[in-house]
Image (spheres, one colour):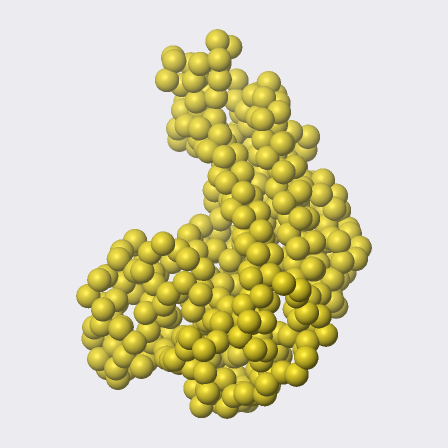
Length: 402
């Protein structure tokens, strides 16, 4: 099959960005990013890197959204980093709300003569080539004109549609698995919060403990009342610390059957594992971050891999997640790049329930963790299939029959 060599600029409907809406002075005067939920989300690189569009969001009001008319973002728009990791491309999901382009991204929308999703997959396939256009000695940047002049090879429109449909179906299955995993995590967290933060675990009559008159005892260490029979310990009293890894991030090829955890956002893949079972993975440099996984896995030199004594290992992810928002201020120190102070975190006070309540909790949530692991491996297989097909589809080596 003969492919047509074109310039990206020949098929653009628009390439825009935040700064297309006015001068720096006017933008500073009229736009104020807010943490509190408002009319529109300001989409940023970190949302795509984390594949998370719920946490750590910036918002603008309706007047600001309308003021930024030249950078309104719609589902299936292509976003590209214009600085730092310049040339990285992302596809905008449907968030069912208004979205505006963040400062460090280009908004790319193609005209109707080509399939928008096909163009995204095509650009993703040659992302390394696109990044070669970035320039700069310290911070790499790419310009609009450079993007317009990038040459790619494209199929005829009917083939574009078939390729886009196939790859979209794979990505939709991945997104669906991610949604299921998030729901499973949310269900487990809801139970944890209800039982161990609100103390409404089931009593002997299977009724919520605190609201049905369960005895609460004042604890001087925590300065609050806790259920009778529960005790206060330090995190170090339940922790099991796994061996420090000798594997650096740049030594991992991102291929294999086992997840590889780092102090970054992405979870890589590797061919060998270090630990198995339910473990937590904490960033030790930069910003706080807590991940967990139930199964065989590996981790980098800059990742602290910990678990807990029997039963408590199922509570540990939620204990750590509950303090994650305050970790940067409480447990990270340093003059330049801040690092996790493990000794400070080890001294964190926790409430230990009775063994009976721990066992009841484990009996419920262990199935959620197991299902999350299954979905994780399903996604690995789907991603491998997509990544295997993508270059062959784009270079015409593989075609899709009607």
